[in-house]
Image (cartoon, rainbow, N blue to C red; front, side):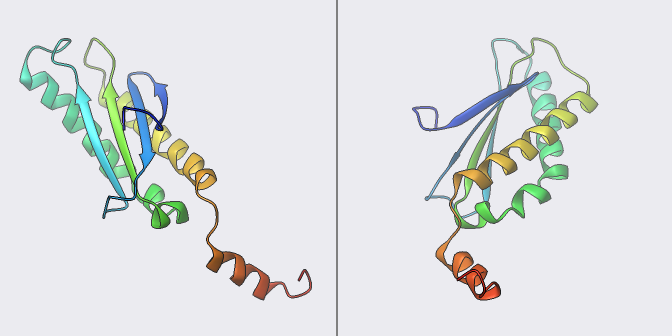
Length: 128
């Protein structure tokens, strides 16, 4: 994922890296990274990971309902960048925004399948 071919963007305090994968069985897999260099205490790292995980859990349904994810699953990495513990509401809004952006961009990445193109022609015979 980090070797190349992945798309990424930053929404402070997060950096989001995502890539479609043929090897995944679930529609989406996530990785959450909080640097040990910035947060020496495991309690602080775990708190931030729990907050990111909960925000993802609350806001993942719209992402999972996109047709592109049903064709090709995504691997998503959330990397925490801030040197301090940000409040819950900031993390939640940034994760929500990131998931919406991923859903929008992933629908452009995957071309429509042949089945959906055939069904579109069947519904509009005048255009054929």
